[in-house]
Image 1 (cartoon, helix red, strand yellow):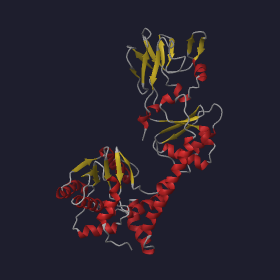
Image 2: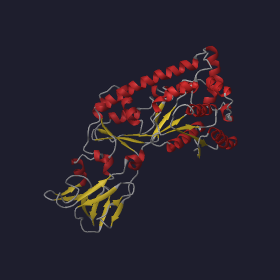
Image 3: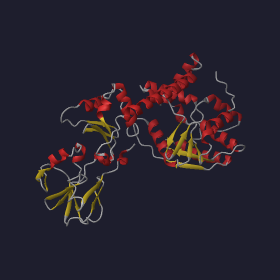
Image 4: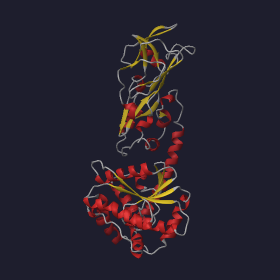
Length: 442
C-alpha cells in the first residue's frame, strides 16, 4: 500500500519548480479535500520560499441547493489563509451528460480568467488519473484519451498545471487530518448514477482488494500512453510537412492540405495525421466512423464530397482538402448596394470589400453567382463566368461567395481574381478580405 505520510511540501515545490517565474499562481478552489490541501500547502510554502502571487478561484455551478453555501465556505478559508478569492457563477448547459456539461462550464470560466503569465493549479491526484484512464478505456478511447490528464497544458493565455498527479487521495487526506483542515463533501460525489462515482465507489474498491497497486499501475500506464502519444504527434508532424504545400488560394485564410501526400500514407497514418491537424479545430469521430474521410479521399471526377464534423466541414477541391467552419458555412445575402465605393464595404457573413484606385461611377451593387453570368473582357469579348472560374481553378466552395461587382446589369469585376478583378494595374481593382476562419475555431 502507498505510505500516507510523505513530504508533501517538498514534493509539491519540486513539481512547481519550472513555474516559479509565473506572474500568478491561481488555485482552482472547489473547497473539497484536494484543492483545500493544495491551497494550504502553497500558503505555507510561501512563508519560507519566494513564490508568485497566490490567488484562488471558485466556480459556482448552482446545480444543487447545498452548493449555495460553498462560496461562503471558500471565502472563509481564503480569508483565514490571506488569499484573495474570485467567485465566478456559471450557467451549466443542459445535455446528455451533466458531469461533462458542468466540467465544460467550469473550464470555460478558468479559460477566461487565465491571463498571460498565469498558471492555474488544480488538485487532481493519482487516484483521479487512474479513474480517468479506466473511464476512457470503457468508452473505447484511443491512445490520446487513455493517456489521461496531462500534467500541464495551455489554458487561456496561460497554462494549467496539475502538480499532485503523483500523490494519492489517502496521502492528501492524511495531510488534511494532520493539519486540522475542514473541507466540503459534495453530496453528488455519492451519487452512483454518475459514471466516475460508480467507478470510485463500486469498481475501484474491488480492484484494489485484489490488486492493491491497481491505481498506481494504471497511472503508470497512462504515463506510458502519454509518451506513445508524443511519438504519434511527432509522426503526424512529419507526415503533414509534405502536405503543407502552398496554394495560390492561401489568401482565403482557410486551412488546407495537399491531398496526394496524405493519400500515399497507410490508412492508420492518414488518420493519425488528420487527427493531429483537425484536433485544434473540431472534435473527431472514433476510429469506426471515418468513412466520411474515405469517401472524400476516394472521390473521382467532378464529385464535390464533404465530410461533416461537429464544428465544421472538410471539403475537397483542386487536389486539396479544406477545413470550413464559422462564417464559411453561412450563405451570404443575395445582393448588397455599395453606395460609397470609396469606403470599405462590410458584407454580411462574408468579409470586407475595398476598391483600390479610382472607383467606377455608381450606382454599384455586389452580387453572388447564381449561374449564367457573362463578363466582357477586353480583347476576348464576352465570356461565360463559369468558364472563367474554371480557368482560374477557383475551388468550388468559394464560387458561391466570391463578390461580383455590378454596374446596372454589367458585371465589372470578380474580387481577387487576376485579370477579372477590375480595369487593370493602372486603373482600379476589387479586393476582398474573406471572413476569418477564427470565427469557427473551437
